[in-house]
Length: 136
Image (cartoon, rainbow, N blue to C red; front, side, top):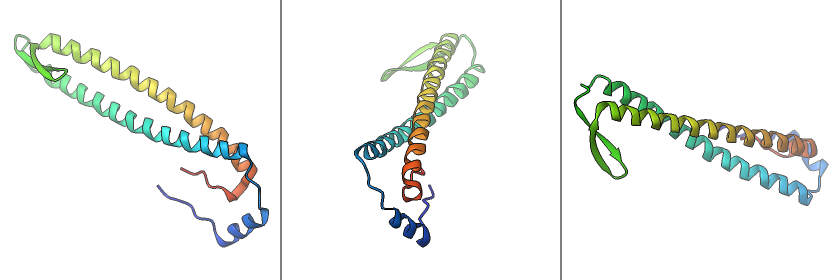
């Protein structure tokens, strides 16, 4: 992440403006900060889910090479159960569908957060101009 520092001229002009931070401004800044933290957590969770889905798809591809009569170990909770290959493929497909729906939910949640952050940025930059830095 690259942080942008104010130049000496920008800093001097910001000091000349001397805007008072109102309670509502501080609430907007706090809201932006909490949304930014949520955004980072959701992005991390999204990356984890996508990686998990890729792993399931890779496992499914490998299991298609296994003979249908063979038993395949499948993890349920904390233990492994030997199940027929077609049943394991069905379980993996349902797990993949579940992850797909979770990913879509996370993406829509992330879009909502980013939209609200955009509105807060507009409002705060409109009020404070260059004397505030909300770049994440």
